[in-house]
Image 1 (tube, helix red, strand yellow):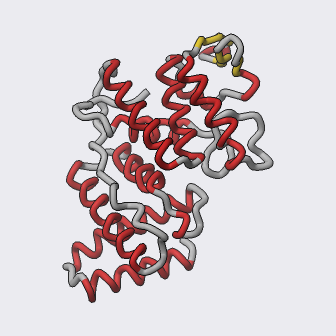
Image 2 (cartoon, rainbow, N blue to C red):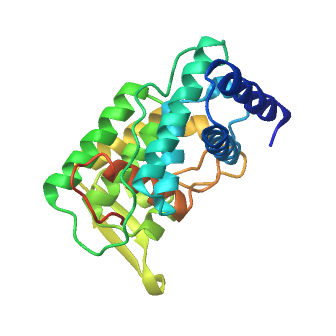
Image 3 (cartoon, rainbow, N blue to C red):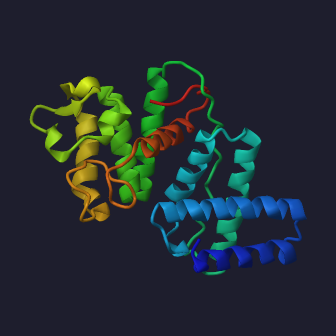
Length: 249
C-alpha cells in the first residue's frame, strides 16, 4: 500500500480512538474495511484519495458481496466507509462527502433462477441514472455493458472479447466469437446502440492506454476488461433491485 494511504489510515484511526472513542473491536473492524477499500482503489489505478468517487465505493462493496459477505458485514462496511468519507471531507482530503449516499448491497447468494423482465429493467434504469448523475467514464461504461448484455443475451466472455470493429451501427448488430470459436451476429436495440455510442464516443478515450488495442470495454487501467469486473458490475446493478435473490449473467 502507498505511504499516502498508510498515513491516511493512521490519521483516521486516531480520529476513531480520540474523537469517536470507539471500542477496540469496532476500530479494528473499521480499519480492516478502510484498508480493503484502499487496496481496491490501488487495484483500480486510483493513487490519490482526492480522486475517490461514489462508483469506487459501490464497486468495492459489490466485490465484497460477490465474495459472499454476510448482510450484517456488508452493512457494517458501508457504515465504516461512510464515516471515513465524512471525516475525509471535513478534513480536506475530499472535496465532498462522496459516501453520504452509499448503501450496502444485498449479500450475493449463488441460487439458480431467471431474471424477470421488470427486474432487469429496474437494474438498467438504476445504472443509467447513475451514469447520468456521475457522468464518469466508468459509470458510462457500466451502463453500456449492462444494456448490451440485456439487449443481446451475449455471454460475459463474448462481451469482454468485443472489439470496435465488431460493432455494425448501420445494421444494429455485434459480431461475437462464441464457444468453439464460432462467430455469430447478434442484433441489438436502439437503447443498446445509444449506450454504446455514449461510452465509445464520450468516455472510452479517457481510459485509453498504449496497450488498449481495439477492445470496446476497458478496465480502469486501460486494458481489455476482464470477466470478474463485468460480473461485479452486474451484481452491483442487481443489488439495487428489491427482492432479487439470484444474481449474475
